[in-house]
Amino acid sequence: MSFADTFLPEFDQEMKTTRALLERVPLENEAWKPHTKSTALGALASHIANLAGFGTPIVTLTELNFAPAGAPPRVPPQFHTREELLQKFDENVKASRDAIETLQPNELGTPWALKHGDHTIFSLPRAAVLRTLLMNHIIHHRGQLSVYLRLNDVPLPSIYGPTADT
Image (cartoon, rainbow, N blue to C red; front, side, top):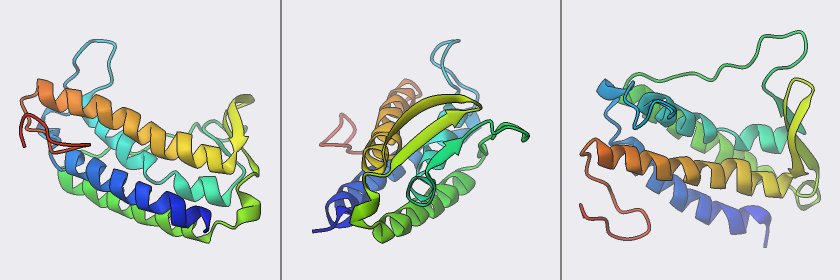
């Protein structure tokens, strides 16, 4: 059984659940924060939509540098309408899924690094990066988003079972 055969069913389920939350984000309140140190609602939702595309660079590159030498720092796009947010999320999910389907067994252990300029944030085998930077990172921020939605009185969809709203 290939990595894709074992990873993609879980990825598909988690992305379906993530999309259900993103569908409910009230972007008319995109600047809302639960605390002054928190990320704004719109920025958090945009971050999740952007993270869904990280499968492609994880599979096709050996590193991603947010501030490469001689170039401006990478600034991820922000989405200001639900349509933009969901369109980019769907595109990113498809691109990541397509890339993961091409992954060969001998590529799973290839070292992959996330960098900011000369600083290496982490370096792990590619399979671990797919689990942590792609899947777990999205799930982490999806949890934050569910709290943001609750605090904005937005009914929550089922995540791993019924919510008080389902």
